[in-house]
Amino acid sequence: AQKVTQAQTEISVVEKEDVTLDCVYETRDTTYYLFWYKQPPSGELVFLIRRNSFDEQNEISGRYSWNFQKSTSSFNFTITASQVVDSAVYFCALQRGSTLGRLYFGRGTQLTVWP
Amino acid sequence: ETGVTQTPRHLVMGMTNKKSLKCEQHLGHNAMYWYKQSAKKPLELMFVYNFKEQTENNSVPSRFSPECPNSSHLFLHLHTLQPEDSALYLCASSQAYDADTQYFGPGTRLTVL
Image 1 (cartoon, rainbow over the protein chains, first blue to last red):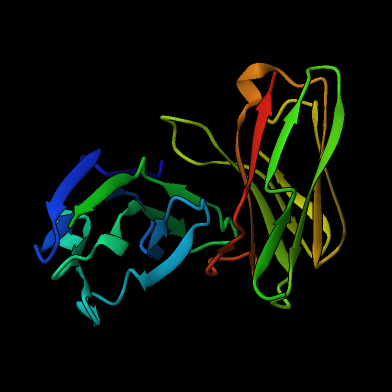
Image 2 (cartoon, each protein chain N blue to C red):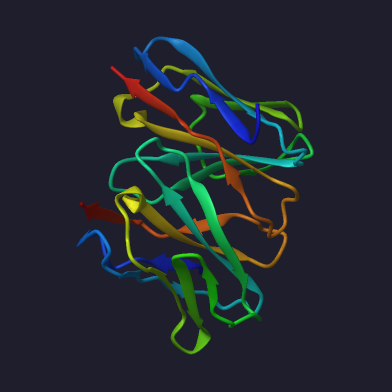
């Protein structure tokens, strides 16, 4: 069975602080994909990143960075120097690398960045 | 229009009404999805269409009826809904059904009175 756990329900930080959102996943597949999506108050899920299970290189995109560790089944997301516009719900998701392309979502982490 | 659009953005309906949600993707994708997002619950996949054919129905009650006339349009027909069906309904599309990135629309916020 596939499962994604985001243990942090809510996180509050002050602007310019760094914040890490945790994601732990479960799957028996050897090929799979991991995603992060951002959901601002407007409701739309905004795609942030997709990683496949064979690529454990960390990735940085501006203030965003992702740490993928297969040994701990984790795919954590760090925002450096957070800004008020980063306030949103962030979802981690898992997708099997087979014909079953459904996304298995975590429950999300509500991030609030205070000015 | 770009990306994935959904109309209406907000909908209030009584339990005896019939209404439809519309989704349109402008990305040239071949797969489309309906998700339900309720408060305090993970996103739930409802239906999947691949090249206009329904490939997945995730045990959704028959009061929700999807329709996919072509690869760009997806509808969700609603009838005799219950208050617990109140939720954000999200549409998504992807280039292919198998392990491809899904792009989401802004959702329809549905309230059933």
